[in-house]
Length: 527
Image 1: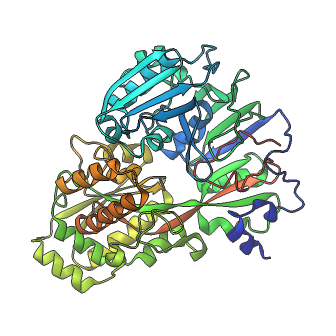
Image 2: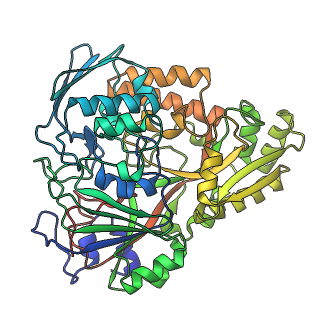
Image 3: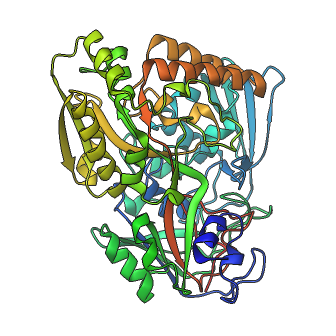
Protein backbone atom coordinates (compact mmCIF):
# COMPACT_ATOMS: atom_id res chain seq x y z
CA UNK A 1 0.00 0.00 0.00
CA UNK A 2 1.30 3.46 -0.83
CA UNK A 3 1.81 5.97 1.95
CA UNK A 4 -1.03 8.02 0.49
CA UNK A 5 -3.26 4.99 0.56
CA UNK A 6 -2.37 4.41 4.17
CA UNK A 7 -3.59 7.88 5.07
CA UNK A 8 -6.95 6.98 3.55
CA UNK A 9 -7.27 4.09 5.95
CA UNK A 10 -5.71 5.57 9.06
CA UNK A 11 -9.13 6.15 10.54
CA UNK A 12 -9.82 2.42 10.27
CA UNK A 13 -6.57 1.11 11.65
CA UNK A 14 -3.53 3.21 12.48
CA UNK A 15 -1.65 0.05 13.33
CA UNK A 16 -1.46 -0.85 9.65
CA UNK A 17 0.19 2.46 8.97
CA UNK A 18 2.98 2.04 11.45
CA UNK A 19 3.97 -1.60 11.13
CA UNK A 20 7.38 -1.91 12.67
CA UNK A 21 7.18 1.22 14.81
CA UNK A 22 6.24 -0.58 18.01
CA UNK A 23 2.68 0.78 18.22
CA UNK A 24 0.79 -1.17 20.86
CA UNK A 25 -2.91 -1.85 20.98
CA UNK A 26 -5.20 -0.17 23.45
CA UNK A 27 -5.40 -2.16 26.65
CA UNK A 28 -1.75 -3.31 26.83
CA UNK A 29 0.28 -2.21 29.83
CA UNK A 30 1.80 1.23 29.39
CA UNK A 31 4.93 2.94 30.64
CA UNK A 32 4.73 5.77 33.13
CA UNK A 33 6.81 8.92 32.90
CA UNK A 34 7.88 11.73 30.63
CA UNK A 35 6.14 14.70 29.08
CA UNK A 36 3.81 14.71 26.09
CA UNK A 37 4.29 17.89 24.06
CA UNK A 38 1.43 18.97 21.82
CA UNK A 39 1.45 22.01 19.55
CA UNK A 40 -1.91 23.75 19.19
CA UNK A 41 -2.64 26.10 16.31
CA UNK A 42 -3.97 28.83 18.59
CA UNK A 43 -4.11 29.89 22.22
CA UNK A 44 -7.45 29.39 23.99
CA UNK A 45 -9.17 32.35 25.57
CA UNK A 46 -10.27 30.27 28.56
CA UNK A 47 -10.35 26.67 29.74
CA UNK A 48 -13.73 27.13 31.42
CA UNK A 49 -15.65 24.86 29.06
CA UNK A 50 -19.02 26.09 30.29
CA UNK A 51 -18.08 29.41 28.69
CA UNK A 52 -16.44 28.36 25.42
CA UNK A 53 -17.07 26.06 22.47
CA UNK A 54 -13.48 26.30 21.21
CA UNK A 55 -11.69 23.14 20.08
CA UNK A 56 -8.32 24.62 21.10
CA UNK A 57 -9.64 25.00 24.64
CA UNK A 58 -11.20 21.55 24.71
CA UNK A 59 -7.94 19.71 24.01
CA UNK A 60 -6.21 20.58 27.30
CA UNK A 61 -9.47 21.12 29.21
CA UNK A 62 -10.87 17.62 28.71
CA UNK A 63 -7.82 16.25 30.58
CA UNK A 64 -8.76 18.41 33.59
CA UNK A 65 -12.54 18.49 33.54
CA UNK A 66 -15.29 15.88 33.48
CA UNK A 67 -19.08 15.86 33.43
CA UNK A 68 -21.85 13.57 34.57
CA UNK A 69 -21.62 11.83 31.18
CA UNK A 70 -19.06 11.50 28.39
CA UNK A 71 -19.24 10.36 24.77
CA UNK A 72 -17.82 6.97 23.87
CA UNK A 73 -16.24 6.13 20.50
CA UNK A 74 -19.67 5.92 18.86
CA UNK A 75 -20.72 9.29 20.34
CA UNK A 76 -23.16 7.60 22.70
CA UNK A 77 -23.38 9.25 26.16
CA UNK A 78 -21.98 7.05 28.93
CA UNK A 79 -21.98 7.72 32.70
CA UNK A 80 -18.79 9.40 33.92
CA UNK A 81 -19.25 11.21 37.24
CA UNK A 82 -22.70 9.67 37.43
CA UNK A 83 -22.68 6.04 38.53
CA UNK A 84 -26.13 5.46 37.09
CA UNK A 85 -29.36 7.27 36.37
CA UNK A 86 -33.03 6.65 35.74
CA UNK A 87 -35.90 8.52 34.12
CA UNK A 88 -39.50 8.52 35.30
CA UNK A 89 -42.13 6.88 33.10
CA UNK A 90 -43.46 10.24 31.94
CA UNK A 91 -39.93 11.40 31.04
CA UNK A 92 -39.95 14.46 33.30
CA UNK A 93 -37.89 13.41 36.34
CA UNK A 94 -34.26 12.35 35.94
CA UNK A 95 -32.41 10.96 38.96
CA UNK A 96 -28.61 10.85 38.83
CA UNK A 97 -26.69 8.69 41.30
CA UNK A 98 -23.17 10.04 41.73
CA UNK A 99 -20.05 7.93 42.10
CA UNK A 100 -18.68 7.77 45.62
CA UNK A 101 -15.12 8.77 46.41
CA UNK A 102 -14.46 10.90 43.31
CA UNK A 103 -11.90 13.57 44.18
CA UNK A 104 -11.40 17.04 42.81
CA UNK A 105 -7.82 18.08 42.13
CA UNK A 106 -7.82 20.07 45.40
CA UNK A 107 -8.37 16.82 47.31
CA UNK A 108 -12.04 17.51 48.09
CA UNK A 109 -14.58 14.75 47.44
CA UNK A 110 -17.21 15.56 44.83
CA UNK A 111 -20.75 15.62 46.21
CA UNK A 112 -24.18 16.65 45.01
CA UNK A 113 -23.57 20.20 46.27
CA UNK A 114 -20.81 20.62 43.67
CA UNK A 115 -22.93 19.12 40.93
CA UNK A 116 -25.91 21.32 41.81
CA UNK A 117 -23.77 24.46 41.78
CA UNK A 118 -22.10 23.53 38.49
CA UNK A 119 -25.34 22.62 36.73
CA UNK A 120 -27.07 25.74 38.03
CA UNK A 121 -24.25 27.97 36.74
CA UNK A 122 -24.27 26.20 33.39
CA UNK A 123 -28.03 26.54 33.16
CA UNK A 124 -27.80 30.29 33.72
CA UNK A 125 -24.67 31.17 31.75
CA UNK A 126 -23.49 28.16 29.73
CA UNK A 127 -23.26 28.51 25.96
CA UNK A 128 -25.23 25.35 25.16
CA UNK A 129 -27.64 25.13 28.08
CA UNK A 130 -30.72 27.01 26.89
CA UNK A 131 -32.52 24.20 25.05
CA UNK A 132 -32.41 21.90 28.09
CA UNK A 133 -32.54 24.47 30.84
CA UNK A 134 -35.65 26.17 29.53
CA UNK A 135 -37.47 22.99 30.62
CA UNK A 136 -35.85 22.54 34.03
CA UNK A 137 -38.41 23.21 36.75
CA UNK A 138 -36.35 22.18 39.74
CA UNK A 139 -32.90 20.85 40.56
CA UNK A 140 -32.44 19.21 43.95
CA UNK A 141 -30.19 16.93 45.98
CA UNK A 142 -31.95 14.47 48.32
CA UNK A 143 -28.56 13.38 49.67
CA UNK A 144 -24.83 13.85 49.08
CA UNK A 145 -24.72 11.45 46.14
CA UNK A 146 -28.05 12.02 44.39
CA UNK A 147 -29.19 14.81 42.07
CA UNK A 148 -32.73 15.09 40.75
CA UNK A 149 -33.67 17.15 37.70
CA UNK A 150 -37.36 17.84 37.20
CA UNK A 151 -38.55 18.96 33.75
CA UNK A 152 -41.80 20.50 32.54
CA UNK A 153 -41.83 18.09 29.59
CA UNK A 154 -39.68 15.26 28.21
CA UNK A 155 -36.34 16.32 26.71
CA UNK A 156 -35.02 13.47 24.57
CA UNK A 157 -31.35 14.53 24.19
CA UNK A 158 -30.81 15.30 27.90
CA UNK A 159 -27.80 13.02 28.44
CA UNK A 160 -26.32 14.23 25.16
CA UNK A 161 -26.35 17.77 26.52
CA UNK A 162 -24.84 16.60 29.80
CA UNK A 163 -22.03 14.77 27.95
CA UNK A 164 -21.12 17.66 25.69
CA UNK A 165 -17.90 19.47 26.65
CA UNK A 166 -18.24 22.37 24.19
CA UNK A 167 -20.04 25.01 26.22
CA UNK A 168 -21.24 22.09 28.33
CA UNK A 169 -21.72 21.33 32.03
CA UNK A 170 -18.26 20.52 33.35
CA UNK A 171 -18.39 19.86 37.08
CA UNK A 172 -16.39 22.12 39.42
CA UNK A 173 -16.18 22.48 43.21
CA UNK A 174 -19.00 24.63 44.56
CA UNK A 175 -16.53 27.18 45.93
CA UNK A 176 -15.02 27.66 42.47
CA UNK A 177 -18.47 28.12 40.94
CA UNK A 178 -19.55 30.59 43.61
CA UNK A 179 -16.42 32.67 43.08
CA UNK A 180 -16.68 32.75 39.28
CA UNK A 181 -20.37 33.44 38.87
CA UNK A 182 -21.05 34.53 35.30
CA UNK A 183 -17.39 35.14 34.48
CA UNK A 184 -14.96 32.57 33.03
CA UNK A 185 -13.12 30.67 35.73
CA UNK A 186 -9.55 31.90 36.09
CA UNK A 187 -6.88 29.32 35.16
CA UNK A 188 -5.52 29.20 38.71
CA UNK A 189 -9.01 28.29 39.94
CA UNK A 190 -9.67 25.66 37.29
CA UNK A 191 -10.27 22.51 39.33
CA UNK A 192 -11.92 19.40 37.99
CA UNK A 193 -11.97 15.64 38.51
CA UNK A 194 -9.90 14.61 35.47
CA UNK A 195 -6.61 12.67 35.31
CA UNK A 196 -4.48 15.82 34.91
CA UNK A 197 -4.47 19.07 36.86
CA UNK A 198 -3.64 22.59 35.78
CA UNK A 199 -0.17 23.87 36.70
CA UNK A 200 0.84 26.85 34.57
CA UNK A 201 -0.28 29.04 31.67
CA UNK A 202 2.45 31.19 30.13
CA UNK A 203 0.53 33.45 27.78
CA UNK A 204 1.77 33.31 24.20
CA UNK A 205 3.93 30.27 24.90
CA UNK A 206 2.49 27.17 26.58
CA UNK A 207 0.19 25.59 29.12
CA UNK A 208 1.37 22.87 31.51
CA UNK A 209 -0.66 20.11 33.15
CA UNK A 210 0.60 17.37 35.44
CA UNK A 211 -0.76 14.02 36.53
CA UNK A 212 -3.39 14.08 39.26
CA UNK A 213 -2.14 11.15 41.32
CA UNK A 214 -5.40 10.73 43.23
CA UNK A 215 -7.57 10.53 40.12
CA UNK A 216 -10.45 8.08 40.52
CA UNK A 217 -11.33 6.45 37.16
CA UNK A 218 -14.53 4.69 36.20
CA UNK A 219 -14.41 0.91 35.95
CA UNK A 220 -15.74 0.64 32.39
CA UNK A 221 -13.37 0.00 29.45
CA UNK A 222 -11.91 3.00 27.65
CA UNK A 223 -13.91 4.13 24.63
CA UNK A 224 -13.67 7.57 23.08
CA UNK A 225 -13.88 10.20 25.81
CA UNK A 226 -15.57 7.73 28.17
CA UNK A 227 -14.37 4.84 30.28
CA UNK A 228 -11.10 4.20 32.09
CA UNK A 229 -8.41 6.90 31.91
CA UNK A 230 -4.80 6.26 32.86
CA UNK A 231 -2.38 9.20 33.08
CA UNK A 232 0.85 7.56 31.95
CA UNK A 233 2.64 10.81 31.14
CA UNK A 234 3.86 12.80 34.13
CA UNK A 235 3.06 16.03 32.34
CA UNK A 236 1.23 17.35 29.30
CA UNK A 237 2.57 20.54 27.75
CA UNK A 238 0.48 22.39 25.18
CA UNK A 239 2.36 24.94 23.08
CA UNK A 240 0.63 27.75 21.20
CA UNK A 241 2.16 27.71 17.72
CA UNK A 242 0.14 29.67 15.17
CA UNK A 243 2.66 29.25 12.36
CA UNK A 244 1.95 26.09 10.37
CA UNK A 245 5.54 25.57 9.30
CA UNK A 246 6.76 25.95 12.86
CA UNK A 247 4.44 23.14 13.97
CA UNK A 248 5.63 21.03 11.05
CA UNK A 249 9.31 21.62 11.81
CA UNK A 250 8.64 20.85 15.47
CA UNK A 251 7.07 17.45 14.79
CA UNK A 252 9.84 16.55 12.35
CA UNK A 253 12.56 17.41 14.85
CA UNK A 254 10.84 15.67 17.75
CA UNK A 255 10.29 18.92 19.65
CA UNK A 256 6.59 18.08 19.62
CA UNK A 257 4.97 14.66 19.93
CA UNK A 258 1.64 15.70 18.44
CA UNK A 259 0.62 18.69 16.32
CA UNK A 260 -2.85 19.70 15.20
CA UNK A 261 -4.22 21.30 12.04
CA UNK A 262 -1.41 20.98 9.52
CA UNK A 263 -2.53 22.39 6.13
CA UNK A 264 -3.11 19.59 3.69
CA UNK A 265 -0.71 21.07 1.15
CA UNK A 266 2.14 20.30 3.56
CA UNK A 267 1.31 16.59 3.66
CA UNK A 268 3.81 15.85 0.88
CA UNK A 269 6.65 16.97 3.15
CA UNK A 270 6.02 14.17 5.67
CA UNK A 271 4.36 11.40 3.66
CA UNK A 272 7.58 9.35 3.51
CA UNK A 273 8.74 10.13 7.05
CA UNK A 274 8.44 6.90 9.04
CA UNK A 275 8.83 8.76 12.34
CA UNK A 276 5.54 10.58 11.81
CA UNK A 277 2.01 9.18 11.67
CA UNK A 278 -0.45 11.30 9.65
CA UNK A 279 -3.93 11.28 11.14
CA UNK A 280 -7.07 12.35 9.30
CA UNK A 281 -9.69 13.43 11.82
CA UNK A 282 -12.60 11.96 9.93
CA UNK A 283 -14.42 10.52 12.93
CA UNK A 284 -16.31 12.55 12.05
CA UNK A 285 -15.10 15.21 9.59
CA UNK A 286 -15.30 18.91 10.28
CA UNK A 287 -17.65 21.15 8.37
CA UNK A 288 -16.31 24.45 6.99
CA UNK A 289 -19.13 26.94 7.18
CA UNK A 290 -20.07 30.55 6.55
CA UNK A 291 -22.15 31.90 9.42
CA UNK A 292 -24.79 34.50 8.61
CA UNK A 293 -25.96 37.25 10.95
CA UNK A 294 -29.65 36.39 11.32
CA UNK A 295 -30.19 38.97 14.06
CA UNK A 296 -29.46 42.37 12.53
CA UNK A 297 -28.36 43.97 9.30
CA UNK A 298 -28.79 43.46 5.59
CA UNK A 299 -29.22 39.67 5.52
CA UNK A 300 -31.04 38.98 8.79
CA UNK A 301 -34.50 38.15 7.44
CA UNK A 302 -33.98 38.83 3.74
CA UNK A 303 -34.21 35.18 2.78
CA UNK A 304 -34.23 35.96 -0.94
CA UNK A 305 -30.90 37.76 -0.66
CA UNK A 306 -29.46 34.82 1.28
CA UNK A 307 -30.70 32.53 -1.50
CA UNK A 308 -28.84 34.74 -3.98
CA UNK A 309 -25.60 34.26 -2.05
CA UNK A 310 -26.11 30.50 -1.94
CA UNK A 311 -26.91 30.34 -5.66
CA UNK A 312 -23.69 32.20 -6.51
CA UNK A 313 -21.33 29.78 -4.79
CA UNK A 314 -19.27 27.08 -6.49
CA UNK A 315 -18.20 24.84 -3.61
CA UNK A 316 -15.42 22.96 -5.43
CA UNK A 317 -12.91 25.86 -5.62
CA UNK A 318 -13.98 26.96 -2.13
CA UNK A 319 -13.10 23.55 -0.68
CA UNK A 320 -9.94 23.29 -2.78
CA UNK A 321 -8.78 26.66 -1.46
CA UNK A 322 -9.25 25.58 2.12
CA UNK A 323 -8.16 21.95 2.05
CA UNK A 324 -6.19 21.26 -1.13
CA UNK A 325 -6.12 17.74 -2.51
CA UNK A 326 -9.47 15.95 -2.83
CA UNK A 327 -8.28 13.31 -0.37
CA UNK A 328 -8.82 15.89 2.37
CA UNK A 329 -12.41 16.89 1.58
CA UNK A 330 -15.68 16.02 -0.14
CA UNK A 331 -18.74 17.93 -1.29
CA UNK A 332 -21.91 17.35 0.71
CA UNK A 333 -24.64 19.76 1.72
CA UNK A 334 -26.03 17.73 4.61
CA UNK A 335 -25.31 19.08 8.08
CA UNK A 336 -24.38 15.58 9.23
CA UNK A 337 -21.78 13.49 7.40
CA UNK A 338 -22.66 10.40 5.41
CA UNK A 339 -22.59 7.36 7.69
CA UNK A 340 -24.03 9.23 10.67
CA UNK A 341 -27.59 8.21 11.45
CA UNK A 342 -28.88 11.78 11.11
CA UNK A 343 -27.58 12.13 7.57
CA UNK A 344 -30.20 13.27 5.06
CA UNK A 345 -30.24 14.78 1.58
CA UNK A 346 -33.42 16.73 2.34
CA UNK A 347 -33.06 20.34 1.25
CA UNK A 348 -29.63 19.86 -0.27
CA UNK A 349 -30.78 20.26 -3.87
CA UNK A 350 -30.00 23.95 -3.28
CA UNK A 351 -26.41 23.13 -2.32
CA UNK A 352 -23.57 23.94 -4.75
CA UNK A 353 -25.74 25.56 -7.43
CA UNK A 354 -22.97 27.65 -9.03
CA UNK A 355 -25.65 29.59 -10.91
CA UNK A 356 -24.63 33.25 -11.41
CA UNK A 357 -27.69 33.99 -13.55
CA UNK A 358 -30.05 32.80 -10.82
CA UNK A 359 -28.04 34.69 -8.21
CA UNK A 360 -28.37 37.97 -10.11
CA UNK A 361 -32.11 37.48 -10.53
CA UNK A 362 -32.55 36.78 -6.82
CA UNK A 363 -30.47 39.85 -5.96
CA UNK A 364 -32.85 41.94 -8.02
CA UNK A 365 -35.91 40.37 -6.40
CA UNK A 366 -34.41 40.97 -2.96
CA UNK A 367 -33.97 44.67 -3.65
CA UNK A 368 -30.19 44.61 -3.40
CA UNK A 369 -28.73 48.02 -4.30
CA UNK A 370 -25.00 47.55 -3.86
CA UNK A 371 -24.91 47.77 -0.09
CA UNK A 372 -21.58 46.45 1.28
CA UNK A 373 -21.64 43.00 2.82
CA UNK A 374 -19.25 42.87 5.76
CA UNK A 375 -17.38 39.57 5.79
CA UNK A 376 -15.04 38.68 8.68
CA UNK A 377 -12.37 36.00 8.98
CA UNK A 378 -9.31 35.15 11.08
CA UNK A 379 -6.10 35.11 9.07
CA UNK A 380 -4.55 32.53 11.39
CA UNK A 381 -7.41 30.14 10.56
CA UNK A 382 -5.68 29.30 7.28
CA UNK A 383 -8.36 27.21 5.61
CA UNK A 384 -11.12 29.67 6.47
CA UNK A 385 -9.04 32.64 5.30
CA UNK A 386 -8.33 30.98 1.96
CA UNK A 387 -12.00 30.10 1.55
CA UNK A 388 -13.02 33.68 2.32
CA UNK A 389 -10.89 34.95 -0.56
CA UNK A 390 -12.65 32.63 -3.01
CA UNK A 391 -16.12 33.43 -1.68
CA UNK A 392 -15.38 37.16 -1.93
CA UNK A 393 -14.38 36.72 -5.56
CA UNK A 394 -17.43 34.62 -6.44
CA UNK A 395 -19.85 37.06 -4.81
CA UNK A 396 -18.23 40.05 -6.49
CA UNK A 397 -18.52 38.29 -9.85
CA UNK A 398 -22.33 38.37 -9.60
CA UNK A 399 -22.47 41.96 -8.38
CA UNK A 400 -22.21 41.92 -4.61
CA UNK A 401 -20.07 44.56 -2.93
CA UNK A 402 -17.98 42.74 -0.35
CA UNK A 403 -15.93 44.25 2.48
CA UNK A 404 -13.58 41.50 3.72
CA UNK A 405 -12.27 42.30 7.20
CA UNK A 406 -9.33 40.20 8.38
CA UNK A 407 -8.40 39.84 12.05
CA UNK A 408 -6.27 37.74 14.35
CA UNK A 409 -8.19 34.85 15.84
CA UNK A 410 -8.91 36.41 19.22
CA UNK A 411 -10.27 39.61 17.68
CA UNK A 412 -12.28 37.64 15.14
CA UNK A 413 -14.06 35.63 17.83
CA UNK A 414 -14.68 38.74 19.93
CA UNK A 415 -16.31 40.49 16.97
CA UNK A 416 -18.16 37.40 15.78
CA UNK A 417 -19.66 36.74 19.21
CA UNK A 418 -20.68 40.35 19.92
CA UNK A 419 -24.41 39.78 20.27
CA UNK A 420 -25.18 43.37 21.31
CA UNK A 421 -23.75 45.05 18.23
CA UNK A 422 -22.65 42.54 15.57
CA UNK A 423 -20.91 44.44 12.77
CA UNK A 424 -20.83 41.65 10.22
CA UNK A 425 -23.05 39.77 7.81
CA UNK A 426 -20.85 36.77 6.97
CA UNK A 427 -18.26 35.02 9.18
CA UNK A 428 -16.04 32.07 8.29
CA UNK A 429 -15.66 29.18 10.70
CA UNK A 430 -16.08 25.43 10.99
CA UNK A 431 -17.89 23.09 13.30
CA UNK A 432 -17.64 19.49 14.38
CA UNK A 433 -20.33 16.85 14.23
CA UNK A 434 -22.53 16.58 17.28
CA UNK A 435 -24.19 13.33 18.36
CA UNK A 436 -27.65 14.87 18.21
CA UNK A 437 -29.18 17.58 15.97
CA UNK A 438 -30.34 19.51 19.01
CA UNK A 439 -26.65 20.26 19.67
CA UNK A 440 -25.92 21.68 16.22
CA UNK A 441 -24.51 25.06 17.20
CA UNK A 442 -26.36 26.98 14.52
CA UNK A 443 -29.65 25.80 16.05
CA UNK A 444 -28.67 27.46 19.32
CA UNK A 445 -30.23 30.95 19.41
CA UNK A 446 -27.34 32.11 21.62
CA UNK A 447 -24.65 31.04 19.13
CA UNK A 448 -23.11 33.52 16.67
CA UNK A 449 -25.60 33.94 13.85
CA UNK A 450 -28.49 33.93 16.34
CA UNK A 451 -31.04 32.05 14.24
CA UNK A 452 -34.31 32.26 16.13
CA UNK A 453 -37.16 32.69 13.66
CA UNK A 454 -40.63 31.67 14.92
CA UNK A 455 -40.62 28.55 12.75
CA UNK A 456 -37.26 27.25 13.98
CA UNK A 457 -38.33 27.90 17.58
CA UNK A 458 -41.31 25.61 17.03
CA UNK A 459 -39.31 22.89 15.27
CA UNK A 460 -36.55 22.96 17.92
CA UNK A 461 -39.06 22.48 20.68
CA UNK A 462 -40.82 19.64 18.86
CA UNK A 463 -37.50 17.90 18.09
CA UNK A 464 -36.49 17.94 21.74
CA UNK A 465 -39.76 16.46 22.98
CA UNK A 466 -39.84 13.48 20.62
CA UNK A 467 -38.16 10.33 21.95
CA UNK A 468 -38.74 7.94 19.01
CA UNK A 469 -35.79 8.05 16.60
CA UNK A 470 -37.82 7.74 13.39
CA UNK A 471 -40.09 10.57 14.45
CA UNK A 472 -37.11 12.71 15.48
CA UNK A 473 -35.40 11.98 12.15
CA UNK A 474 -38.50 13.17 10.29
CA UNK A 475 -38.49 16.34 12.38
CA UNK A 476 -34.80 16.85 11.59
CA UNK A 477 -35.66 16.61 7.90
CA UNK A 478 -38.22 19.38 8.43
CA UNK A 479 -35.47 21.47 10.00
CA UNK A 480 -33.17 20.80 7.06
CA UNK A 481 -35.91 21.93 4.67
CA UNK A 482 -36.32 25.15 6.66
CA UNK A 483 -32.53 25.53 6.80
CA UNK A 484 -32.26 25.72 3.04
CA UNK A 485 -35.24 28.08 2.93
CA UNK A 486 -34.04 30.56 5.56
CA UNK A 487 -30.29 29.86 5.23
CA UNK A 488 -28.97 30.67 8.73
CA UNK A 489 -25.53 29.49 7.58
CA UNK A 490 -23.92 27.96 4.50
CA UNK A 491 -21.96 24.74 4.71
CA UNK A 492 -19.18 24.36 2.12
CA UNK A 493 -18.50 20.62 2.49
CA UNK A 494 -16.86 17.95 4.65
CA UNK A 495 -13.18 18.35 5.51
CA UNK A 496 -10.60 16.20 7.24
CA UNK A 497 -8.09 17.97 9.43
CA UNK A 498 -4.55 16.65 9.25
CA UNK A 499 -2.91 16.01 12.60
CA UNK A 500 0.58 14.55 12.95
CA UNK A 501 1.88 12.27 15.71
CA UNK A 502 5.33 10.89 16.41
CA UNK A 503 5.39 7.14 15.87
CA UNK A 504 6.79 6.46 19.35
CA UNK A 505 3.55 7.59 21.00
CA UNK A 506 1.86 4.34 22.01
CA UNK A 507 -1.60 3.39 23.20
CA UNK A 508 -3.64 2.21 20.24
CA UNK A 509 -4.53 5.58 18.74
CA UNK A 510 -6.71 4.96 15.70
CA UNK A 511 -8.26 1.71 16.92
CA UNK A 512 -12.01 1.18 17.16
CA UNK A 513 -12.07 2.26 20.80
CA UNK A 514 -9.87 5.26 20.09
CA UNK A 515 -10.69 6.71 16.67
CA UNK A 516 -8.97 9.91 15.54
CA UNK A 517 -11.07 12.89 16.62
CA UNK A 518 -10.79 16.63 16.05
CA UNK A 519 -10.04 17.03 19.75
CA UNK A 520 -7.27 14.52 20.61
CA UNK A 521 -6.64 13.25 24.12
CA UNK A 522 -3.54 11.79 25.74
CA UNK A 523 -4.65 9.67 28.67
CA UNK A 524 -4.02 5.96 27.98
CA UNK A 525 -0.97 7.04 25.92
CA UNK A 526 2.72 6.67 26.62
CA UNK A 527 6.17 6.58 25.00
